[in-house]
Image (tube, rainbow, N blue to C red; front, side, top):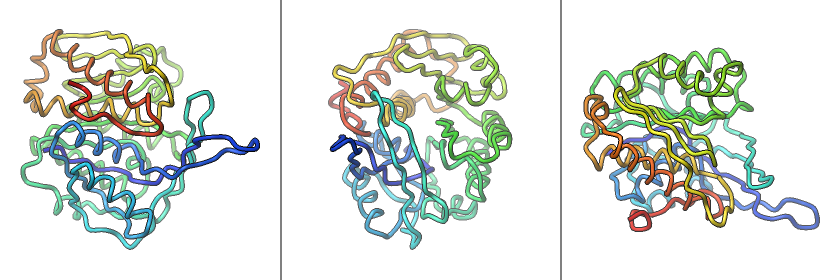
Amino acid sequence: MIVIGGENLIDFVQTATENDLPVYTAKPGGSCYNVAMAAARQGQEVVYLTPISKDSLGNVLAQRLLDDGVHFAAPRSDKPTSLAVVSVNKSIPSYQFYRNGTAERDVTLDDLHRMMPENAQVFHIGSLALIDGEDGAAWEAFFEAQAKAGVLTSLDPNVRPGLVSDRQAYVDRLLRMTAHAGVIKLSDEDLEYIFPDMPLMDAFTAFCDAGHAALAVLTKGAEGCFARTASVTVTLPATLADPLVDTVGAGDTFMATLVSECVARDLLTRERLAALDEAELTDILSKAGKAAAINCQRQGCNPPSQAELS
């Protein structure tokens, strides 16, 4: 079972231009929400730990996860749904967020411990949930607790600089959490934010050395990805989308595939991940890259099913 925490929101995504004005379509989204959806589509048992609003937009969010077979651990919240505006320029998305006092931030550490399923194998968190606030502190403490309880922990910073008011506090939190992460995936853009004056691969090494992740993956968009364990490293070219529609949700789909493969291949301990050989790690990364490419051939975040990846 994969348990996922973190934000859910409605993306108002630019889908066209009409009379020189952008046209937006409402789509369910949020990095961690997308990971839950993508992992469920790959046949995994997925439990979502974050509250979803009872409002009409929350109903849309809830129904999409239910349609993909995701289970809810948290009761629905009376607070409103978080919003994001996603504008697209030359296939690259930019984001504006509205999430103060919303349902997905309506969490406490006690709530998380109470709702956590006893048979969880993986716990994933990242992105907006970790930026600040009492909810950010709760997620960090819960992440550490799950690692100490023997659950395989998964972290994707998926940095959104426009939402960060205290950069140093946020970076410090990410670096603290690496000490408790079993699997880490981050992008070249994440590293440029965390270590702005450092060459990319030096920054990746510094981030990994801050913790003890058994599997660390760096994604570099069209330039592919790089991964390392205690015993092997793999560099892989990108699987290119044809046609490229947009890149919304590509990283989330990649992340979901990583954690899904950990469950499918029984890679649920640091020892098992450390024992990965180059061929198996390459196979995992290839599948993740293929999943991300299929997602990029569609509008918005629309991850592939397991059948599409076979």
